[in-house]
Image (cartoon, rainbow, N blue to C red):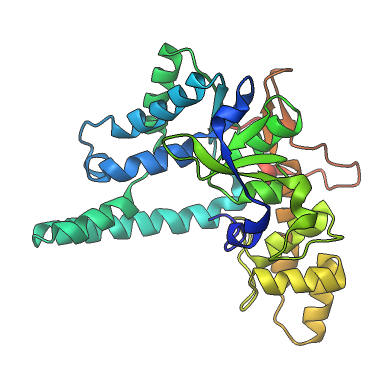
Length: 315
């Protein structure tokens, strides 16, 4: 899902960028975003379990493009299910099942165009699809990492710890995570747009002057994210105005309650957990070859952090 409406409101600080300008750099790739795009052209086959390699070819074309320009790609895959994202994942799985049923119905009625659209919405990037791509990456000697949980946190960790110079993705969540440098909308020719976290203070459409990283994160969570649905009527512009005025989520919640907005104790608790999930999710450190937190939690945080993903992940 990402942060709905965020990227268009950051257009003023997005700079055109061709990947050839990253020659000599290491770049981490949100692999599932490539697989999802590649799967659009073969969604019917994937949904029916028919043999196809179009989605793999899509990814490898882009891998080879990066290598052609002297860039070292590191492909990052999602890992185990994150407890904080369970509701969102269940909703997506239900939507895929409904679209698959519609696709089959349209197909049986001879409406192939409508069926094709529904197959595209029904396609799932399963672990076996990821496994197929990993086998090709091994053959081609391409680096990859399977994150303990979410690729977003893993990608951010690699960038923040300077193990890579930039990240390629389509997911606006990485801005909420605090990823320093992101290439969005990379096409098959290597042209995209670059986001740098350091330029947020210069943004025009959404004035973020004086916003700390924590304020930007809380604004994103308040507007609705994968870990917490927004309150009714709370979009990005309203959450921005709230954070600008009150500076922190606890003061915002106090204000909302005072003004008779239905804010449940569960919402408050989930908001705290969403903040901690963005800040301290478990990731893999290739240098130490160990599972670590994206950033280390302070000592005063509750010991029970299993909502960040149990350690170690048990199948």
